[in-house]
Length: 100
Image (cartoon, rainbow, N blue to C red; front, side, top):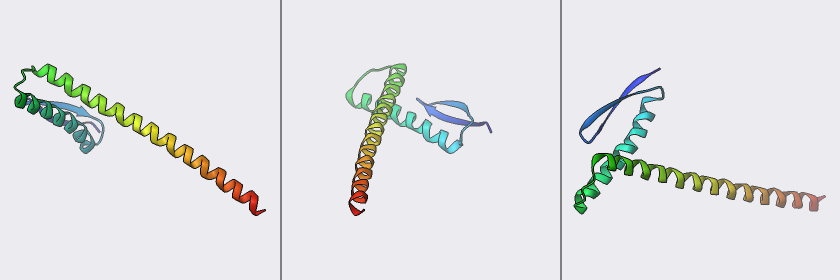
């Protein structure tokens, strides 16, 4: 069922249609809002002068980078689990052969 979600970015409300669970969609949107707020606060503290579009692009790039890092960590974890499972299976096979 399609639902509406409204978020606020730079004091401007944006309303989106979502087919997913509203709580999940809100959680995803909150990631973007938090990242934008973080960049905006960093700019205020450093006296920087980035326009809103640049801050949006930086926020998107930061989120994309975080996503890539998580994907790499996930792949590394799967590889480690696979190796350990293979070693455990071999160990169990050797023990089973020795018991016969």
